[in-house]
Amino acid sequence: MTKFLLSVHVLAAIVAIGPVTVAASMFPPAARAALARPGDEHSAGIARVLYRICGIYSALGLLVVVFGFFTAQSLDVLGQTWLMVAIALTGLAALVLAFAILPAQRNLIDEITAASAARVAGSGAGTDTDTGSGEASPGGAPAAGAVSAMDLPTADMPTTSLPASRVAAALDSGAATGNGIALARTKRLAMTAGIFNLLWATVTVLMILRPGSTTGV
Image 1 (tube, one colour):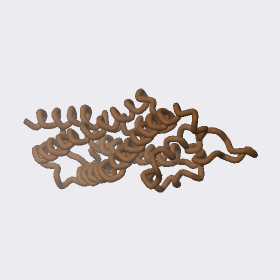
Image 2: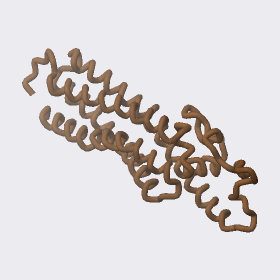
Image 3: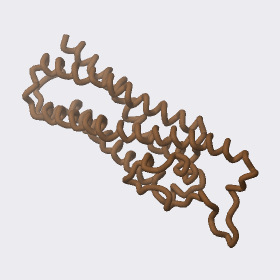
Image 4: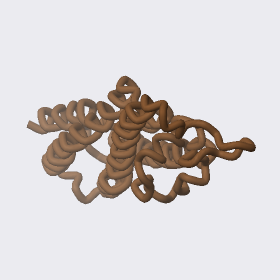
């Protein structure tokens, strides 16, 4: 029974945690590409799929914890230091995933959706050439409604504080890159994903080395 529980625990870790670590690392560049090209359904679709993978497989990751507990109980190692450290790191990784990675991904997906919708609406409005709203004013001054990096919030502010049309226009014009909205936030998420992956790598090493363990499994 012990070997069965250990086998299920290891398989669950590979099947559930593996995809989350990979998808969490791939999401920031995918989101950055989707934000830089609002209206590109291919780029947006990749970001959405990666987000769903993180959400679904993180729920399946509960099996790792459940079978890990029963395996440790069967091996009678619940009080050993290496296991207690692994449990603490697992809990910390779960907190990082639940309260840092997934919410940040959800916010970026919302921004991608809003920017895409605004791009479509803006394209429809742009067909009305009689208004001449897209032309620059005399003297080279920006036309009314022109968008620059100053129109965007800082990297620490959600884009929902501004109309989606202005966010989409700035992203399309490249102003977002200078402002950091398409780079700083996704880079911060990439760093958080790196911490999450490092925590799980440490847990895996502890599970293999089991320093101080007297079990033969």
